[in-house]
Amino acid sequence: MKKLLLLSVAIAAMACKQEPKDYVTLSGKITNKNSDSLLVRSRTYSKTIQVNENGTFTDTLKVEPGVYNFFDGVESTSIFLKNGFDLDITLDTKEFDESITFEGSGAEHSSFLAKHNLMVEEFLDIDKLSALNMEELDGELNNVKTKFSTFYDTNKNIDTLITKQLTASLDPMLNSYKRYLAQGIALKTALPKGSPSPTFEDYENFNGGTTSLEDLKGKYVYIDVWATWCGPCKVEIPSLKALEKEYEDKNIQFVSLSVDDGRGYRGESKEESAELAKEGWKKMIAEKELGGIQVLSPNGWQSDFIQNYRISGIPRFILIDPNGNIVSADAPRPSSAAIKTLFNELNI
Image (cartoon, rainbow, N blue to C red):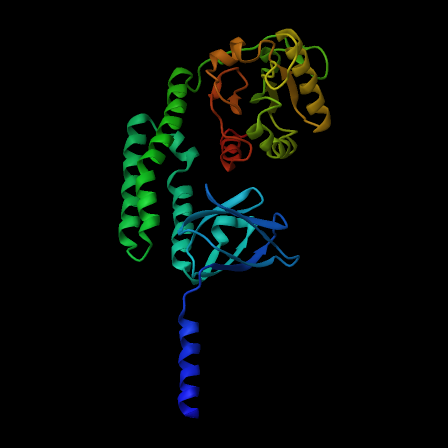
């Protein structure tokens, strides 16, 4: 009787162990963490996970099977979660996508997504694709589509929720890249390298007086078209400052041209909004200690210089040679390694 009782207890214990968990265990360690918490989020789900001082974290989540965004500060990646998974994540935020690894049950699905992110970065390099003409771009995007489709088809062990979602989004993603890049290609056709640059005259200078593009002839001119309300513009400020410092004794002038014209500033009239925008422009330059030549477009987006360069979105960067001719009507951003490559090619 005693043996039967022990056997029953053992069987019951085994049954308990084999019962699937109805939650995900998520743990790991982050080197050079960006914040004291992580965020796991989808369109219908959100959970914050606390990160210890040493970068370790652990928590449990009840989820619907699917792809989730995993945030550390502003940086993020995609992970696949399903109740029953026990997932361990390690990463170094200095090389977020390149360093992230997954171990434990369900790791293969998130590892697949991490590889996919790296493929997007490699195959859809904006700087490289921007150098192509439309025919070349069409051919390259077709090659990219084939590579992704093959990647999806050859990973049969990956949950079909992932591969179906990626397959469905492939054409829209590539079409979005094509539309964006086509604008730049059209710009190169309308404003080709070596042609005289559109000019601006007597723009208000933050340091007093006015500045014209003609005043800057004799050196290369790198123009940052921006506005105080533009988030992506402000993201570029640290990189622009570093670039200005590195090339401060070189044959180049740095110009930041603001299109602040009242957007984001509410006055009782258009004129009052424009005046508030001007004061906001001056305030940001002073507070952020912006360098280079700071000028304000007198008519905002409607200024001839903005219209002639076909600028409909900012930030936009323009490079002009010492003779006043266009080097690039859509130059690489300060945060892109391509800008230093371009400067070096020109012996700046």
